Image 1 (tube, rainbow over the protein chains, first blue to last red):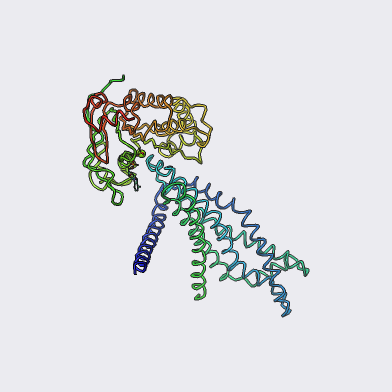
Image 2: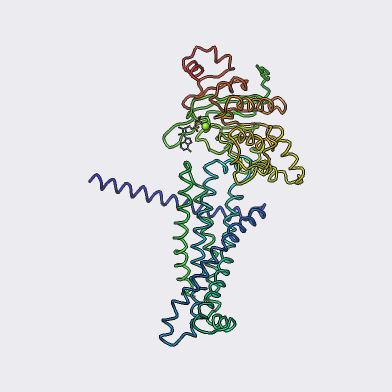
Length: 261
Length: 252
Ligand SMILES: Nc1ncnc2c1ncn2[C@@H]1O[C@H](COP(=O)(O)OP(=O)(O)OP(=O)(O)O)[C@@H](O)[C@H]1O
Ligand SMILES: [Mg+2]
């Protein structure tokens, strides 16, 4: 009886906390658009953040994409050769990489790399009062720290996805050539043949949303960290978990929408 | 000791019946306080008395639950974010833990507020001003160091230098000598006095260090459990027979 009531109270308070958190997050996100259109724009810092989240993620994204392309091709080959349909391999790989694997894997990698960095960086700045220090010297910390970071991930993620797709396809070309002799031109014409506008565009659009989600969640967790150094680790940790989860949710939603088209 | 107790010309900061609670704990309870131009006001109080909360209300980092803060005749509760920022440009705030931007070098830390607010200055001018300011706080050699490489006393002085870059008219110090040895503390105190004398800056100094209070204060206010319990010059408080004041002055 006691424990039942206790559990019920706990559930209610957890639900309430979850709801206020979600509301806070929505307000935080709306504020991004408000501050984005308000001049002056932080060009220098935005470009620097683009460099930091885009360029420095390239090696990691590249290696992962290379391995994905290689493995996908090698593993699909036996199933296709049962039907004697090896010539479909480039097309199949290109469609699955461009539509799904490229964007999602890149986004997950970035959620780990960029999301955790932003959560920890802003969390540390919050805890050591650096954000307050900006505030008191009449510098809008949201504009300087959050808008620049969210803009950078939103712009950089689609670019990283394009690079990852290209590297994956190139890896697939190498894998195809282990068993057969296909020229690069031949491979790419076969790969591109199966790709249509309807494969490419939704994938790019959803990468924009992935980037936006990684940026806003990482910054939200860091910006609102409270209570000592332990909260910095927690901010980084939850930033990764929540943004990875939201990537799958966004993916699910976009699949439903593109299916309707 | 320095006894240039200035004639109160005008109250540039007026705090009236300020209240603030966190959840159910009342931290500030009906605080009334004025700071006049060119005055060094010291707020004394035990740890947890609500000193930092008071100073954070003053600069608008915390919204008070009740009461009004009036700075340069502007009511804090009625102004917009832009007006608040204009007001903040005239106020300097030294954080308890310095709060230097640790991704920037000392030079960038000092140049940062200037580059944001004084866009008309060229890069060379900014560099010159940064060097001048560092010279002033006696840390010219640290210009290319990162905050992580500085000692506590150095960080405090750099933090002070950073707030001074924008020429504030009011300085708010949150424990300027906290955690420092007596020699370094004296240097900081000397800087504070120097600022008052040369630039006529009004200061609110929060501390629980009696030596600091004695040397810097034109007037002292004592806070206990969120209320003001005593007010006067150091000498007046020293002579007081009140038990609470005596125990505080003796114990420390
Ligand atoms: N953000 C907050 N949330 C909840 N309680 C808080 C918060 N900030 C301060 N408090 C509480 O307010 C009280 C006063 O805190 P404050 O930091 O103002 O003390 P202080 O006088 O500056 O102490 P110290 O000399 O140690 O710096 C403390 O009991 C603290 O627990
Ligand atoms: Mg304090």
